[in-house]
Length: 506
Image (cartoon, rainbow, N blue to C red; front, side, top):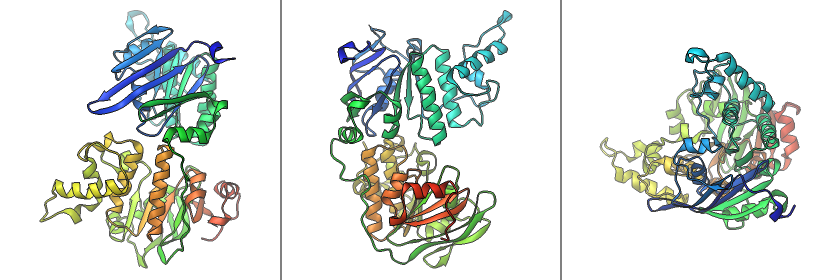
C-alpha cells in the first residue's frame, strides 16, 4: 500500500500551537491516527507530548492549528467534548473511585436504570463483564477498586473508554509502573483494540516497546513535529537522533576507575518476611548495582540501609562505623544520600519551589540563627541547577512545573549538596527520555570518578550492564549472584534473578 492509498485518519492534528505565558509548549504539533493502527508518539521530556495529549483530551485549547475527527474540523471546549467525539485518554496513573466497584467506575454517571430510575446493577455488571471478555482479561466487575494493581486500574479505564464507544484511545506512559507480564497483557489488549478498529496512540520512553507494539512512530522535539514513519522504515538509532537532535556518544558513559576503601558494608542484613542474609560491599569510586525482578526486595534493602524501614538482623557499616537501625538522620549524618524510586511522592515536595527542594536535605547547614532565608536556598539551588544543567523557568517555580528528567536532577542535586560519601539511587532513569538518561548516567559516572560510592538499583538490564562495576542479584529476598563487570551479561543475571544460578557469597 502506497502512502496515498492509506486510509484517511480517524483523527488528525496539524500545526497545533500552545503557549503558557512566555513558554511555547507546542510550536508545531502534528499527528494522524488511523483505524486499526497503534501509533507511537516519542520525544524527550519537554518535547510537547503532554501538551499535545491535553489538546486531544480537551483539557487545553490550542492557540492555533486544526483538529479533524472523522474528516470534520472540531474544537474540544472541554474533556466532555473530547469524549463525545470518541477520544479517550488512559493516563499513566489512573484515577478511579477506590470505594466503588469496577463496574460502577466504568459507568460512573451513565449507569443503566430500571423503572423508578433505580440503577440496574445486574445489567451494569453484565455489560462490564462483556467488555472484559472482549478484551480477553479476567476482572470481576463487582470487586471494589481499592487495592487493584496499576495494570488492572488501566484495564478499567480502557473498559470505560470502550463503554463510551471510543474510536481513539491515547495511552500516556501506560507501562511505566507495570511488570513484564503486565506489559505483555497490555500489548495483547492493544492488539484486540486495533482488531476491533480502534486507533491507538501510545506514548512511551521505552523504544523497545514502541518497536514491539506499534505500526507507526511520530517524533517530536522542542514542541515541534520532527518526523513520522512506519515502524519498518526506521530504527532505534534514527529515532534517538531525531529526538535529541544530536548523536549520543554513549548512553552508558562508564569510565574505568580503581575502587578504594569500603564505604558501605552490609552484613547478613534481614527483615523478616521481606529479605534475608543480604551481604555486599560498596567501595569508594565504585558503582554496585542491585539487580533482580520486581518483588525481589531490592528497594526494601536500600530503605533498610537508610533506616526508613526496620531490619530484624544484620548490620550496616559506613566508613568503618556501625550505623544505628531505623534512623535516617543517622544515615544522613554518616554520609548517605538516598534518591528514592518514586521521585514525585518520596523525593520532592511538588508544590514547593525548585530552590526549596534543592535545599531540603541541607536545612541545618543553611540556617543562620535558626532562620532560613530564601536567598540562601536560591544560592544553593543556582549552583546545583547549573552543575546538573536543570532546565527551568524560575527557581521559585514549583517542582511540579519541571519535566520528569529535571525533577530527577533536583532530587540528585538535593543530596549532592550534602557532599555524601555514598549515594543510593533507586531506578535512576525510570520514566525519563533517552537524552536525559544519558545526562543522568554522566552525572553518576562523574560522581564515581570523584571518589563517591554509588549503590544503584535498576530494573533495566542494559543500564545495570552499562554502568555497574559489580552486580549483586537478589531473588526472593536473598542474594543469588555477585558478579564483577566482566562476568556479568544478560543471561547470567537473569539466571540469578530467577533463582537458577547457585548462590554466591557476597
